[in-house]
Amino acid sequence: MDIAPGAGQIHVALYDSEAKFLKEHVYSQSINADSSSNEVRFSDLKEGEYAICVIHDENENGELDKNFFGIPKEGFGFLNGVMGRYGPPKYDEVKIRWTGESQKVVVPLRYY
Image (cartoon, rainbow, N blue to C red):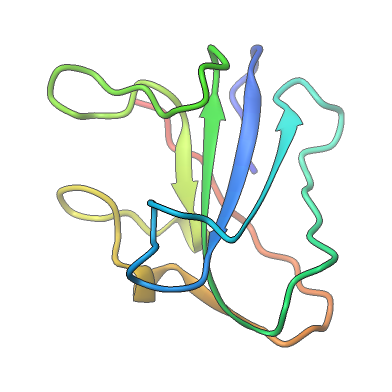
């Protein structure tokens, strides 16, 4: 993850269906943004498909803050850097197939 320097938390959320995408995650983890490691490991995942979303909650209020126009004021990203045109990308664009084997994925964060 490309994390801008500063305080806050990095929240990583996994979603297992289009219906729950960005509404109800099935797995999540958080790390300090100033952590020496920017890796998050999920060890108890069931085999299946998951969409990945990451936010840098700089003020630690538990949500992605947005400006008047709905543009995020904090860092955010999706699997492989996929971004939606007007709003978030579709579930199918940011999902990965988890086979139970160790996998490394990169989620670049975007800051406006």
